[in-house]
Length: 247
Image (cartoon, rainbow, N blue to C red):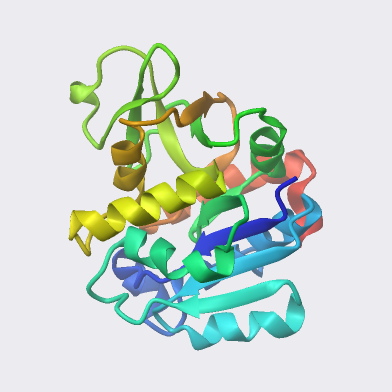
């Protein structure tokens, strides 16, 4: 039973500076008066997660305040967040992860709880949740092998051959896979490495199951286009599914 999650929240959110004015971190953007990060934390708690590790960076003091509201939260700061990528942030959580299996999430997501239910119900210890192509402005696509492993990850659909899914930013990661990713990061000597591409690298030597589930309600919020899509379309669909209890 997985009882621990890691959320990557260190980024500066440069493409949303017209909205945040660098006064709040991107995960504190509010949809109907509820910050993205709190929506995610509450869904995780409702799914049985007891400890939530926030890897912070930009405006980290915002996240420290969440500890008073949610006792299960721990934080660790990526001190070099301005010059490193998401895998460096994930690497910062290694001591707090210890020997546990985890859920790994991005901090700029809004999603229905069913996405977590799907991941947690899978028999596979390592699983990446994919959806159909949502045609957002900043998509990562995963080309799948015949065993639903990762063949490649790309932003360019023209590079894809065969079956594929869109990266949702929601993963279930065994402790063995965590350690394999940390070791790969140590040997790669690439401080800008994205955690997605670290998955791609370790998947060449081990099965990392990809679960493609069409119809999941989710979005990342990297820019104003995605934010407007959530406000105008996605949020009303979440409410229809009863997700309004997270207000």
